[in-house]
Image (cartoon, rainbow, N blue to C red; front, side, top):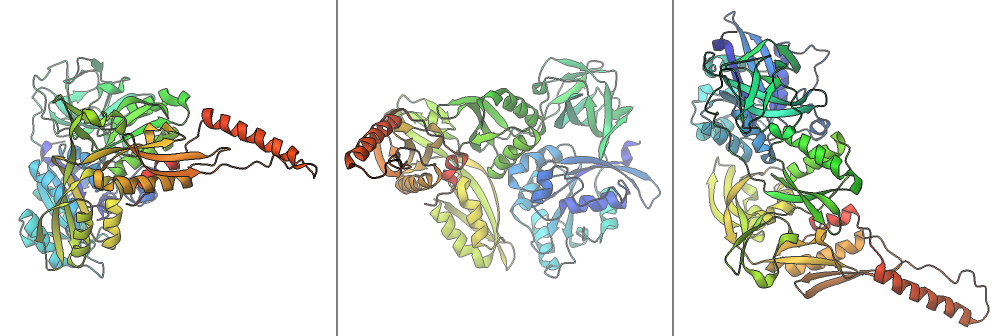
Length: 599
């Protein structure tokens, strides 16, 4: 295929603006799928994606399209997620494209993630095709949304395509724009082979399979693959394209998007962002990869059965192939045994990873409350990164603690501005500015501590704005904070899995609330279980799970009272012994109690 007849593009938008539905219509219009195989969200292959109605993974697919000029074009489409927690997926997809379709809901207008994804596309120097979707809705505000798009990307009004992906309106105009506006890839077939790995997956029979965008040269079966990040070599046994499923082809040329099979069994040898070349005519310089995004939220993942530790390690290795933003390292907890400290981009990302581990790899998990990463300055001047309360030095050794602040953007209808500002101030937010996008919609900028965002900020934001406000954030800097480590003791024993790092002003309230919540969640024993919250050596809150009472005198029918007293004394001595050596089983709900408390 002539390179001038190839177009590589992806669809970007805020969550629920119709990306997957538009992809469905493009596949249906080009008869890439038969009507029998067609279904809603056809590219969302995971059960989780269908259940939640969101895209979690980017999905590449090749479309053959015959244009009005009689020419046959190959369109490589990558459907991308819309939630802020999966922005890394979007950035990797953009690196494999020359253009994007920017989709905006005609009723909702430009939202926070729309702005964020657009800036990503501009940074990658991609051609942007603006589309207003859902124009058939009764609540559509086409003129207002068009003005928002013009202000966002500086396009002309006649460049904006009006469409309804659900009903197929405007699909022909979208195809015309893809052909005429998005440039073909540069033809570099004679250059030494270089391919950018933008994703990967694992097959039990074929090993790790990298998804690549070939930038220079040609990749074909029989040549020897070589990676720039390590010295290992593998013989390529198969290359091909994505047409719903993997379809074998003779070669992948400059400009193509496809996959490479080379029987790679060590999953750590595939790194998204790495450059693949060949031993024959090897390239000397790697392609510029995409920036590595640091995780924002950390949580401990432990197998519920300690015998399944190696199974969890294997599952994480394979899942990292498919999700490069996942970071993990082994850790040990006194309460939970051996497990992994994992880093995530956000709470939804953390939730999805946990569900994928349990569903796809059948690993039963126990998880600890999420934490941010703090910088601790010790008395001797050294700086320590702390991503779990267990690593926090004793207070007498700490000189200062810095916490991550996020640069936050909230897009909301103007009637909710007051309540949203009140929420942000209650979360220790620092106000920056307000921009009015239209007469009805405003953009608020705040700096907020990540620790305040982690727990319930997003839920409260959606509640007070009736679901209309959208939220996007990125790391700003680290700032000094009056932070303290709040410990929980059960039956006098420190439980590292329940410790949290909190602001000094919130410590007492969180301690009382956590003790009360744990009292409801921890099952009753045959002895009293005291629950205490402490700051250092000072106990600031306490509650008690009362003992179950066994009726040891049930067998006594009358007679002298001394007989009953003897049995009660014997029971009391037994309970004292149980209290001193008894172990308490902590349910998963109790470990996540910190997420359910409200200050």
